[in-house]
Length: 291
Ligand SMILES: CCCCCCCCCCCCC[C@H](O)CC(=O)SCCNC(=O)CCNC(=O)[C@H](O)C(C)(C)COP(=O)(O)OP(=O)(O)OC[C@H]1O[C@@H](n2cnc3c(N)ncnc32)[C@H](O)[C@@H]1OP(=O)(O)O
Ligand SMILES: NC(=O)c1ccc[n+]([C@@H]2O[C@H](COP(=O)([O-])OP(=O)(O)OC[C@H]3O[C@@H](n4cnc5c(N)ncnc54)[C@H](O)[C@@H]3O)[C@@H](O)[C@H]2O)c1
Image 1 (cartoon, helix red, strand yellow):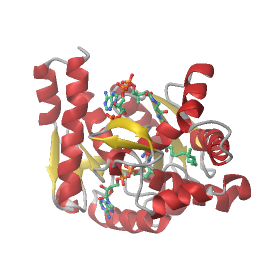
Image 2: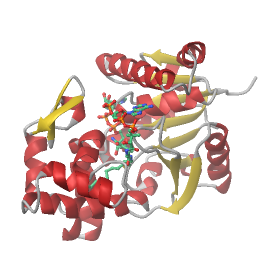
Image 3: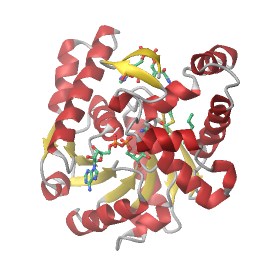
């Protein structure tokens, strides 16, 4: 029997959601995080999300249990990847960190395994160059919350083989997701677009054009976005926001420069929902007031 498993490296906001999405699509998933605490937290996030699906009637209790059975938390990288045909990385948005992780994955994963990065905007080509298998490396950009969002943005590095793209298109379709294929340019399509929108809204926040909740309400109800920019930033994580701004500003210049107030929130450790405070304050994951 060939390689049948899918490995996810990083069990944070995205890695846990990615593992859940794959398991909801019937795939056997191994989930690893360098922090045991984060691995436990990721498991709790998966159970919380599955409860939402059961409450909304999309899943039965039995189906929810079957999904959980398909996700195996693992405490070392080799055990996570040794039987995987696809390895998906979801560690923090740092190019140096991702390169280190890909060097390790290249050493430990089966030679025929595809290695995918969930980076929001970093160079897939540069990440692939940290391996001996650039033709098997691609960007597999999921969206938060991964179990709910329909799209996976596939990014073709300079040396990504067409067969690699097609195999990941197939598995994305099998789990009920839609894909687009984009060139490896900083920010791809989605991050470059959403960053432009969110940064302009952040500048309006800094200029006090309106109260935070009115900025969000205006975008939500006036433009029919499911979430306003500030509440979305708190969901995605202000740490990730800042990482992304730095990458985008390096590529495209000042128009993507991180606003000072974003940097200050991150410096203060206020990352949004995941720390309980960002643009808003959250008591037990329920919004209480603008911070
Ligand atoms: C302003 C600062 C600017 C700074 C500079 C910007 C530059 C950087 C910009 C890019 C950053 C990286 C981007 C990243 O790579 C790509 C992305 O992910 S972009 C974000 C894409 N996602 C969205 O746009 C989400 C939009 N929102 C929605 O679709 C919906 O609101 C929702 C999230 C699906 C929730 O819908 P509802 O369920 O109807 O609303 P609720 O109120 O019930 O949900 C709130 C709560 O529950 C979570 N949730 C809901 N359903 C589920 C589920 N089934 N599984 C998991 N989680 C679920 C939701 O996320 C909320 O979170 P929680 O409170 O549970 O923690
Ligand atoms: N947050 C979002 O909405 C979102 C959406 C799409 C893509 N992304 C991208 O996904 C990636 C992860 O983002 P996130 O929001 O899930 O971050 P996160 O901080 O929630 O999770 C990252 C996890 O990686 C773990 N980790 C760190 N170093 C590791 C290592 N060497 N090996 C294994 N695990 C390690 C951390 O312990 C943490 O649990 C980033 O590249 C980000 O840009 C984020």
